[in-house]
Image (cartoon, rainbow, N blue to C red; front, top):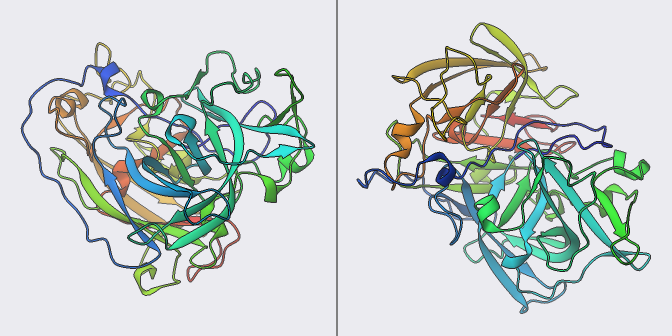
Length: 419
């Protein structure tokens, strides 16, 4: 789920946030054969925790290809006033921990600036947004008890907070829909572990009307505010004492017919422990706009990116006869009459290239088995002819490293994605 450029924000922007609820695509019925459930071994370590693709939290409906994990929160400074929140979406395309307020039962302290409540907004290019007050929590990740790594006093967003000030028009733009409940997201929140260190960056330090940060001056009267990078929503891994230069996501291969679930590992750090040492990989460093180039279908697309928060392969427009979309209410997906065998070649600014072979199957056929949640060959149009989104299906059968901007790793400084 990579955030879009807001009206006022002029920083790096990736594209696309697609979380499609299959209830709206006619995918809730069909056969009920039990497909396999592939898994990779989750190695031991304080810097490791389990990942899961499968049914989401109660009330989310049937959602496929969402990558879940758990986070543990504590009131800052407390070791007992804590809560574990499951079914949090793991997203390499955004930055910061954003939780639905309904999932949080702790009395977390809210962040105020000059005695005014601080609010945060993020927009997604599927024309949704998250809005809510900024709070502080000690966030624990890793280890069998989620006590291996600590991000102390981390600022997080609480979306959908009852009684919160109404989102301003720069956030709740015309045509955008709010994410306030589990039925909107398919998860209890988003763990944004992308390459950016902050959710807004240097622009929010100097631009008051930046679109991300606002303060409530009373009675719901909101104004934009400039805020330092250290006080923004941060990539949680950057706050760890060690294993803080990036992440590794390891997921099993998924058969072409799909799987009931898939289990993998989220490992913190790159080259900091024996369990995260990169072998021979292709390293894709982004250009200043945040993309690598992707040659596909005879054209070079200038906006290629990898994003675990997107639940399919997304490319092309919805009127390309080479890639027919489904009929009826499932037009967000491709429905070829037979599976398409495809190839994309990624090119990095560092001179490396990498060939990615994949396939696209008929989405309606994939959706027909109600017990299938992991799909390696699900795809749909991205809506423009410049972009290619390597979503969660790209991660199946791979180890994917995401290096944080400016961090030192054995493969060089971040940002980059390597696989």
